Length: 494
Image (cartoon, rainbow, N blue to C red; front, top):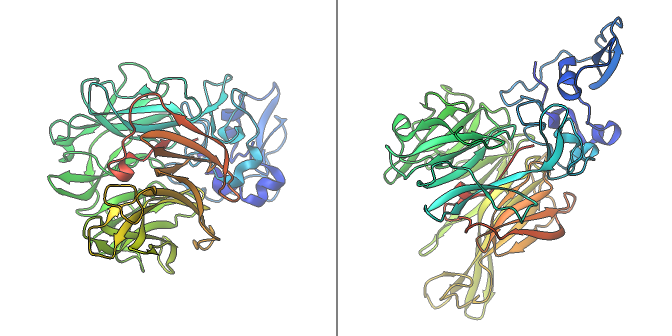
């Protein structure tokens, strides 16, 4: 039995009282984390903690601190913190996990929950240390149009690692597996016969690219809206000419690509790694419990699109069109909804600020969850709306008569009550001019793109305010933003 996800075992109260550094569900967890016990001793789990006992000591039974015999969350992503090159729970926990985050960078560790914010436990058994998480992006290449690269989020002096070994072909859309030990991405020029979905394990070793499937086998010209973590399988939306619709999947180790749905876009894995949410133009937000199951329209979600699950309680964040502009297209707002439907909670709506010659209006773009469901990040996009009937224009652009010197994009954070899904307090402005925000798996950092550069900002998880100076990755080439969530920076799971 694999170890249960630590975000389920460690509530905020338990962390405050006991910490979670030595959590276990069975003795094998202790062996994996701490190695063999001393001579004449054996590991036992008492109150979910690893304790050495004499070999002839009876096993703890029900009610005396042993395991409860009940199910873990049982999903295929449970793999614990003992996977190859791993050392961390797939979701990395959230701000409440701070009770065990005490080991600094370079310090010895047995599990990522021991490492401080932004770090994960890496290395071979007996020599594991806390190291900075990687962030992967799609950048403008030198010899090719685009290339996938990865950097340590705190390292601005080392050149980004180029992930693709196909140096003469473009690559894009890096996505991490659940334990952060491998990254998948797309190689090749877009087209049924030329595009491939591949992966590489970390640390990177030359000549070990694995082809998971290709455009011919999947009948697709590309692999847009690709997702992997927290599942053991990858999912994407099929593309054929101008049509992008229908969800497909392939195992993380590669194999036969199979169709999940005949239509639909924007798949988002739930925390169990087997069910997912997606959207269609006709039905709005739907859920699919597993391959072959009948999709279910989520009550109250009609008209919604671009769903995102958080990894704490599976609440769904989604966008909904509220009007359209002749130049800018659909104008979106964002909401939250329980995975089974029910009350819809508005998170960020359109705005309009009157001016002497019209108004400065805004809509919402590029929303995302913090993994623990306590924050939502989004971009508020501002545009000029002249009253004389002339065309709208994004603020700062030519023709933006109502806001010529104002940034079009501003990243905001909105605190959310994880129990109800409702907004909690006022939105917090993080940075102007940024886009594609992405939370680290521990919820303590935000990656985003500003002036075509990757930037990393630590935040206070209590109030969303910035902590310390922003880290700008100026090495390498321009980070791509032209395909929205496809090009959002992706954090390595802990």
